[in-house]
Length: 267
Image (cartoon, rainbow, N blue to C red; front, side, top):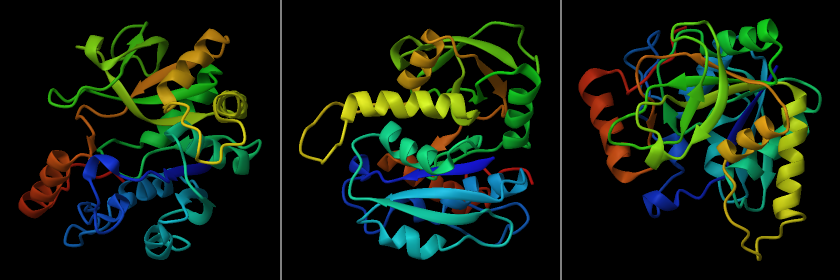
């Protein structure tokens, strides 16, 4: 299994930050509670804790600060290889750059601008893929009341080790449903993702807007194509996406006041 870390976004919701949001020092690992680290290490530490030995970090050409800071990784994290694109029109496009490099290996996906807390999350997702034969396992979180996100429709009883995903609901209709921000999948989903990105963007050169394709619509297309997706409840706390000014400030306050940073993977 190889990690894919999409970090090619331009942080438009934050205006014009002085540095890339992935480097905001709002994360504290429980093993090093006195050290404030870039938020990206919330994901990298969790990948390392699951035994993921290598990961692809996909950045735009303008984000040299991310490449310089993360380097080839640190103790306890995967060995990092940086893939550079001139620009990226959407999250799905960025992720597809990583899946092409991953080839026929399974992929572990997380987002380096998100703080979260979950026990052995990637290990549990990998186990769910193996045990159920699913193409994709999604790491599920409760939805934060002040941050509407797409919801995941599930069958199977609550509390099951994994639950069958039946579909997805947009944020405005997702009240009471869990959401997702982590995933592990087989190469079958990587190839479907790459096909959908090619259909949408083709040889994209940055001068033809074709709408932003996020990952959830691609997952919905995978269900339509007959692929199997399961959900695993990896946390009882909502995740914290720092990509909006108010939420970034909330992460900064939490890191200063509690030393928790809003989410630290249990290692």
